[in-house]
Image (tube, rainbow, N blue to C red; front, side):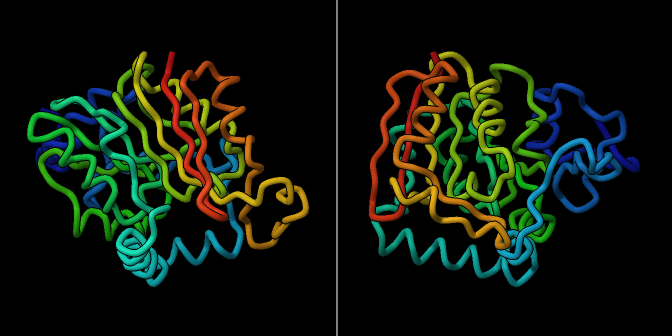
Amino acid sequence: MTEISGLPLPPALQRAMTLLRDPPSNPDTSRGYLDLLRGTDASDTSQNTGAIQRFWASSFGSMFYDNAQVVARRLLDAWQHPIDWLDIPVGGTALDVGCGPGSITASLARAVAADGLALGVDVSEPMLARAVRIQAGPQVGFLRADAQRLPLRDSTVDAVISIAVLQLIPDPVAALGEMGRVLKPGGRVALMVPTAGSASRMWLPAKAGVRVFGDDEIADTLEAGGFTSVRAKNFGSIQWVRGKRA
């Protein structure tokens, strides 16, 4: 069993290590999550440094985001994540990209059941600290990693979900490509993004570090990446996009 400082890794992170493309010889789990960015060259990949991302990355932002999600899921149809549609097999592996405080990751864990694995990936240390404190468990683990360069091997997960995250990623096309790469053939992805339809090109809050997408932008990107059965549904300024890896 892999260990750090003489202590065994938590069960979920032990299993996560077997899925990594380049597992570290001395994994850093000192904060309860597997940190795959600490000590790396930040110039290797672009990161969002806008005002909104800085807010979400703060301790207060992580708490606010968690509570806001809970309220939104209770009151708004657009925030009801499609766990049933993802059709995650019992005992399977599910990935939450941009997991934030981990509440969605925990719902994936309930779908995969005791023999499965639900992994949450985020770059924010405060978000991950809250996720570990509230949601970590035997089949729920969290990784600090970049969505634009997911650390998992090809075809290792059964389902991917990403909620209100792509708009904060500098290269969302790269992130979508990575989600497709790690999905098994037939695996499903569900994405929630802000959209402004045809007005998206005029919506340029560059200083805030956030963007909105055109009505067909995400769906077209998935189809270009080889996804099938791609569907998009709008709820006002929020859009859900779903697809299957061929």
